[in-house]
Image (cartoon, rainbow, N blue to C red; front, side, top):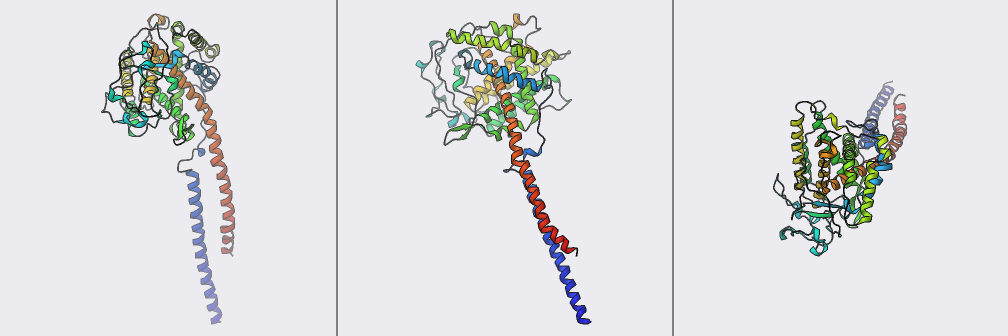
Length: 469
């Protein structure tokens, strides 16, 4: 009896130890499964997985505008984008006059212009038509390198002459647009807006200065409508620029391989609904300026000395200004009459005008020449839109007071084209992201859960059943 009692006692001890060991193994397996699951769900290639978020659909009226997202996508894809793409290739709209070499008025030069990707080789003087010739830049400003690096501006021109335009000041921008020895004519088709390698502290400082000093981020109910508009315009422009950098990206420098960088586009713009909405807002704001100035733009002289191309430019401009589909779908893209109300209206307008002039001056601080070119062009385009909408009193007296420079019209149309291209890219890329993220993450997650279930039943379930006996 004593021996039998001792045997049972030892068996009970072994059983107890087995339970403890089984419990430890189960705990270890549970920890492993949970760790793998958490890692997979919340990381994908080292970054947050967007698939677990609901797909963002942009529907309804664009905030502070008079058109909805669906109409913008439809009319842009069917009408505006094809017209603008063709219009900006005509001689009148592909040449832009710009002062590329200028001192930054806000902080000392950080030397970014001396990098290889920011260097420029000047064309020889005999390549320029007589009307374009100007004094050469100082010799120490010419940093010529072999080839054409990503950020370099190609100054190749052909013999086109511009006539019939007066030079007037734009109260919304900082640059003096009058011809002088510092101005350069640039062929925009030879200098597309694309990735240049301009990143890091210098690039971040530009946008930090734009937002923090001149265009503070607003919180709901804490800022007036007019300042909110300024912020949204800058944010929309910023989104558009980021989209173009991602859309035309240097994927492999050794092979000079260019293409779309969808991850960059998502990281900088598409994952932020506010940035996309502000892009749509800026697009409609600029479109409203173009349609409001339709009588002036129709009668303007698009004369470059090439009759065939000039007639084409004028015809395309009329198709843009008087398109029946656009007028039916979105007759007034933005209602500027709602702004500058009350006694403080004129003072507020001057304040925001000063802020935007500061923003335009910051473009002189951009350390990459090609980035500075497109920054100056698009800020001038936005300043021209502000000038059209807010510097003329009353729709009926509009034609009698509005005066635009040729450079302002070129900047305005090219800006609208850039925004139109961004809208099209957002429309095209968003479904791609939805499809790719679902394929990469949701389906594997289901398979992984199924595997975990089988593992649990095989390893843990059997052991639990044994422990209960």
